[in-house]
Length: 128
Image (tube, rainbow, N blue to C red; front, side):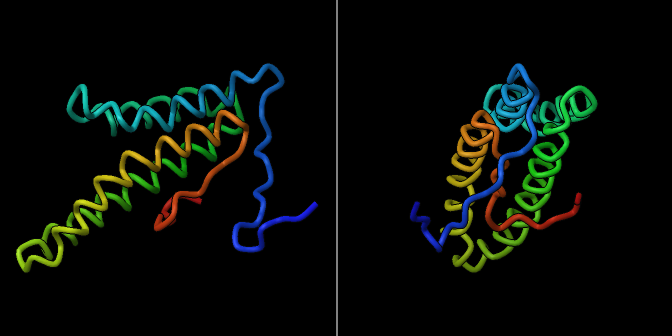
């Protein structure tokens, strides 16, 4: 079996027997996109899901930490790029951040549904 050395295989996260934990983990990732429907829901919903389900399903704790780390990192990047937008250089970075803010949760949800934890690139680790 040949593996791509650039992207090493990630070990699967322990999941519940019935697969419900992986479904909740996928919902946790996708819930970041809820801010498009209700303001602040993309921040509140993932935190609520993480806190309510982490004791029921052990894999939710790791996914919740990853999502919260990404949300904090995204906030920091948006402040930095917003300041740089006054000098024009931050505008393309803000555009790129907007794109990855949609793409990363979708990729994370797909991987979570498969029972794997996907580590969002460029994430600063606050929760370990």
